[in-house]
Length: 206
Image (spheres, rainbow, N blue to C red):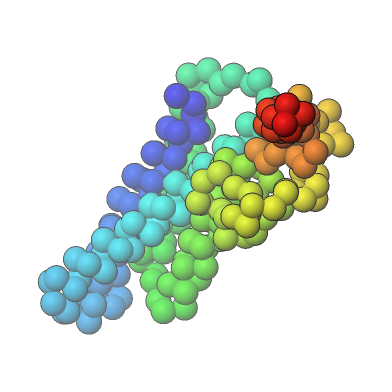
């Protein structure tokens, strides 16, 4: 496994634990009325906030390490450097999560929700199965492989913009890297001609 996975785990666990500590101090010292609510409501609120802060830390770690992987392709990290990076991720995640829990207000909660949504969108764009998801629609993020339209019409060439670059030129099967079949491809023409050959032979015999 890469350091990206371990960084996400360390960041998520550290952020969750640090938030619990900060949140407990907040309910006992600053906002005492929060600790006087029913126990079930406190447990539900605490778990929801812990999951949110841990998810933000996990997604932020995945995004940052993914950017570094794309920037330094082929770079290998030894155990010492990896431990330093993991410690840095854990320290930063714990610091922000603790401060968020200790100073949580209605305004800061709305900011955290916005950060949570932005982090989710960023991770969906970085780890999308189809790099050309933005050729179709925004709602295709997180739903898997982008498929052609269900109307059965031929796929527009505008969906395969990458055919001009050497990395994404169309293959002999008539598909580009985005997974969509190009109209007028050799395989499609061959299948059509092969299916119509028996019909022509029958017409000539008659």
